[in-house]
Image (cartoon, rainbow, N blue to C red; front, top):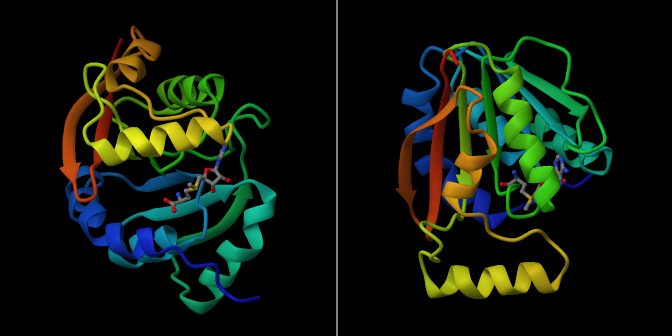
Length: 198
Ligand SMILES: C[S@@+](CC[C@H](N)C(=O)[O-])C[C@H]1O[C@@H](n2cnc3c(N)ncnc32)[C@H](O)[C@@H]1O
């Protein structure tokens, strides 16, 4: 199979990696939610050799992810497991890190809520969640292009861009706390969450 290709992944992988190198410095096992093409997984596993990277997504995307893993294998990169929030239970394994890119605005509101709450419930103390994508701040879009993107997402039936304060509200009292909010190119952000004791 030809490898699926996302130009956005090629553009954002290095800026994201620059942050993951610090955020995941003490993490040993990462679950990636919604691996998509698989481009992020092969790149991050190769550049973060101290940890194991477990890809996951809906079964429809597995052939593409496997094609990338066939082309760019790493000993610390695991083939995709089926995981759809709202359908599947949290995957087996002890993950002290979770990564997801460009999934929060694709998911329906109840799926995005479930993702936040599942991460909060399943990460061990000190576990780290890195969440990349477009997000609103204090009810405001961060750019006109994000406003237009949100309108097109919602018109196509996707959940749409979420506000950071909404994400925080969903995990209130869970011990999952937002530690850093990094501004990245193309009006995207990388949110770094950490599990504290409740
Ligand atoms: C826009 S793509 C992003 C893919 C990749 N992470 C990237 O940054 O290019 C959204 C991804 O979210 C996945 N996704 C959508 N709804 C999901 C759900 N409920 N549970 C898990 N993954 C989901 C899709 O299958 C798809 O791979």
